[in-house]
Amino acid sequence: MSQRFQADLALAFCSLIWGATFVVVKNALEDSSVFAFIAVRFGLATLLMGAFYGPALRRLSWATVRAGVQIGAFMFAGYAFQTVGLQFTTPTKAGFITGFGVVLVPVLLAVFWKRRIHVWAWAGAVLALVGLYYLTVPGSESCAELPGGEGLNRGDVLVFFCAVLFALHIIYVGIYSPHHSVRALSFLQIATTFVLAAALLPVLALTDWEPPRIAWTPNFIFAVLVTAVGATAIAFSIQVWAQRHTSATHTAILFALEPVFAALTSFVVLGERLGGQELFGAGLILAGILLAELKGPAPAAPESAAPPAQPETEAP
Image 1 (tube, rainbow, N blue to C red):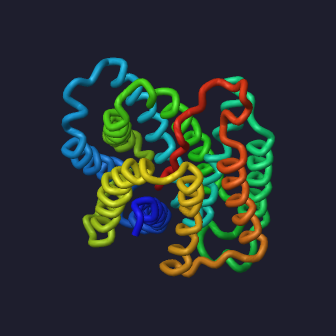
Image 2: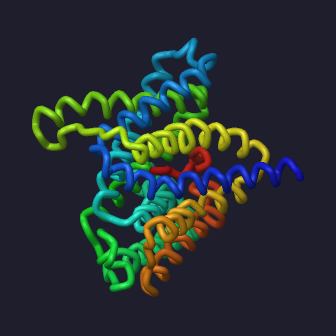
């Protein structure tokens, strides 16, 4: 088995883990409040990645810390919107709406950074936007049996904001990663997410907006281990290795499978079934992601400024 094929399998495994965590997180919220879960998840991930990336953290500059905290703030906000949204929508819809963030990257670069974007990137964004409509707005009886599956709901809107924030996260990772240690930035963004979530807990308790609660059930412990160890510490480390041994094209295709794995996991575990129009919408979003990634990378126009780093998908 060639090293490139091993790398492709490794990236497919990462997408499988990230896709499956949409269901895992939704189930975990039965035993925990949103921000308590985020704090525990990223607290454990911070400890693991701190031990793993120790040598890269010994000589942190203030510039690196500032960069890591900034991208960590976007990561925290993205996960906050996504996790809250999962309380009200289905894992399949959340997976595809989150994936929509990938096609927002070139759009945001064009609007706010004045980058010239290839027409294929715009086509991918439009295609995914149409798919988003068919996935969320009409609703159908086939998926109405699950909470959040009956049509557009507040969970879909919250996860859409998550997609925007993750797109900004991708852009800022691209801005900072050429100038700072990737390992240091990886750790700092995870640690920042933990610190912000933990700092918010007493505020939420005092205001009664979301009193922190955790029931240390097997279901909750399993969710923390899967998301903190599997989807964060292990998967991110595998990703770093695998992307050195395969092409950007293969990476884009394999990462686009994340919402597909979210749908398959939700089908197997929760019995979620999409109707014809929802499947059509999900297919359009997937096609838009692939079109934007493969045919229209962000700096496709020759006169554009330097590109951001290879876009990364965001797991729940």
